[in-house]
Length: 163
Image (cartoon, rainbow, N blue to C red; front, side, top):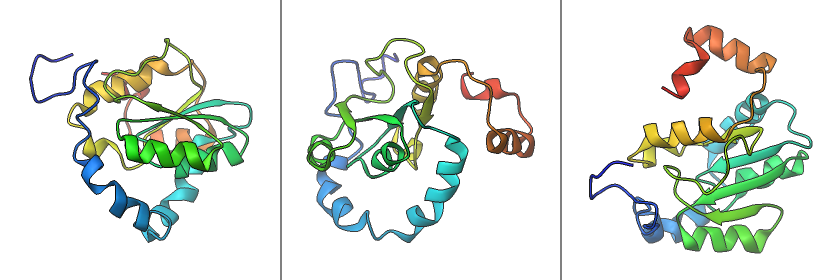
C-alpha cells in the first residue's frame, strides 16, 4: 500500500470518493439508467456461465448487479466502502455485501471464480492496486468464449490485468 496520505489505508474505509455524499442521488437513478441497461447484457455475457460460481462484485454499491449475478445462480459477494449503499444491498437481499475498499480486500487468495468491477475503476484512485487485488482473488480458470474474443480484440496478454 502506498504511503500517500490521500490514498485509503487498510483501516480507513471512510475514503469512498464522495459516494457517501451522493448515495441518495445514486439510489434514485440506478434502476432507470440507460447506460447500465445497455451494458448489463455485455457484462453478463463476459462473466460466462456463473451457476454455482463464487463471484465478487467490486464496488457493488446497492447490489443491483450482484443480485443479477445471484439470479443467474452465482454465490454473489459484493464489496463497497459506502455504508448507505451497503445498507440498501443488505435490505434488498440475495447477496453478501461487505464493507471494504478495492485496494485491500479481506479475502484469501483464489477465493472467487469471477471478479466484476462494473463502471467502478474510474472512482478508485488506487485502481492499479484494485486490479492486482482482483487478480489475487481469482481462482485459475480458462477464459470463456466471449473473454477470448475480447482478448483477441485487445491484443494483449492476459497478464496485463495483474501487472
